[in-house]
Each structure stands twice: as structure tokens, then as C-alpha cells.
Length: 371
Image 1 (cartoon, rainbow, N blue to C red):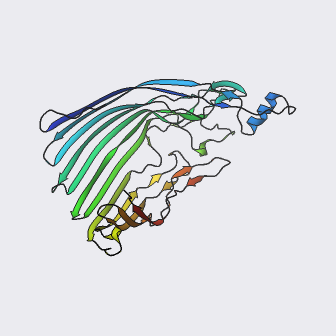
Image 2: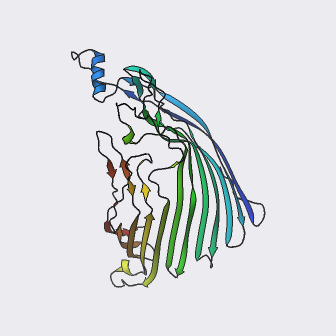
């Protein structure tokens, strides 16, 4: 656990943290089929089930993995002036291996080869940050910013196992939940708020993000590279090393405001419940996201999600004792429909996209506190 900041002097302080934990993960998976007497031998029925897209009999048995996880943080801070504080951070964390609930038995020509791992390797994170926190004009303007660099080892994701070969010595392609040796997240973030004048606050935040695979040589293939037959065999896997993550924009920005103004006892005369001062308020927010690539960089045809912005706004009144509140709001007023998922399809199934549920929505909220 983290210690309270240790103040070396009036300007320099240091926070240290260390935690050791013991975790146990376990899981299993099995496949059974219904055999019908009189419909042929068991092996014949199983072969027919497999030919129709089913699975053979298997049971991975219960698998268990333990992890002694060590988490630590080193966080120095330096208060340069009353308004500016610089800080750094080095952090280490571990996450237990994920349970592959879809683990299967691997067969070649009906002969069992091995089980897919039920539990992945544990993931390790090393995070490095340097930043600054500032406040100005009696804290009516606050601006914070930081650079970060996060290395992730044994990052949990789907990968391709080519360790099993067929009767001709050609590696088979088995895609399942595993780990990439090394991924990296790095970028710049900032946020702040400005009290432009009494009752009005402007909020803003933004980020520049670069998520990248550093060592991932056994990544799944795009559907365009998974043909069968022909003079040239299809590749079994592709290297994503030194390529960006899919569907992560480089730039993102958010800006909004909130304005409140006392209105007095404007509902006086409507009853005891209304004989109290109220405050009117209004707010709006715009969240902008840069374009992002949805397809694998090795894809033959590339699909992109264009840059878009989501706009929300609302207004209302509330009593100063916060017992009653009424507001009218609108979400996604431009009715933007960005793609939130993408599947490249196969030779026998089409490409599909997913659209979010956050369509244009208009409504109102009445809140009453009874005590």
C-alpha cells in the first residue's frame, strides 16, 4: 500500500508504495456430442459432426495457475512555486493470466495433438510519467499536463499458434486467447477548467495517443490472407510488431461549460414545497475523436472511421437545498453514428460493422429527495 507523502522539505515530497498479493486462477472447458445408436459407429458420427462445423469430444480438465504479484509506485513531487508543481511517477503492476474459456483440443487428421492453454501468462506493466499541475488567478484557472510511457509485457490478446503441423509438415493455424510479448502505450494528456466569470466554468481535456505493438510476430491474419488450396499456400500468421493498435485515434479532445445563476424564490405561491430559492443552470459538452483505422494494416481493403464529434446539452432548475431538481437534456444532438466494432468477415461470411446505441436522445429528469 502507498504511504502518505513524505515531505523532505517545503518543496520536495515523495510517495512510495509496495504491495505483494497472491492470486489463484482456475478454469476448464469440455465438449460433448450426442451419439445416436444405429446411425453408424461412434467415430463416424463424430467425423460427421466435425465436418458440419462441430467439435470432437474433449475435456481440458481443471487447470490452475498461481501468481505472486508485486505492485509498486515511486512518486516524487516538487513544488516550484505556489502555482506550479512538477511530478514524476514510476509504477509496476502485474495482472494474473486470463482464463481462456474457449480452450479446445487441437486435432490433425482426427489425431489429438494438444490442448490450447486454459490460462494465459500473467501480464506485467511498467508505467513512467512526468507532468505538471498548475493553478492561476486564485485557482480560477487550473491546467494540468503529463507525458506517459507504459510498457506491457505478455499483453493479453488473440494470437496464432503454429507449433502443430499437418501430415505434410505444414504448420496449422490455431487462433486463441494468448499473449503478445510486448506492447507499448505512450502519449500526452492535459486537462483543466476555467472560471470565466461568476457561475460559469469551462472544462477542457485532450490527449495524443500512440498505442503500438512492439513484439508481436504471431498475430492473427486478415481474412484476405486465409485462402485454402492453390499453388501458393496461405500464410499462417502475420507480424504486427511496430504497428499501431486498431481503432485507437491519435487525437481526442473534449470541451464543455457549465453555467449557474441564482433565480431567487421564483415559484413563490405554488405551495410550501415551492417557497424556497432556486438556481438555474445550463451546460453543454463536445467530445471530438480523430479518425481511426478499423482494419489490420496488412488488409487488402482498408476501412476507416472518420473523425466525429458527440454533442450533449441541457438546462434546468434546482432548489438551493438540492431537494428538487428538474432538467431537460439532449444527447448526441447531431445523431452521429460512428462504428464501434468491425469484423472483416471470411470467404463465406460478409464484413460486418457495429453501430452504437447512443443515437440522438431527448428527455427530462425530475429528482426529488424525500429526506
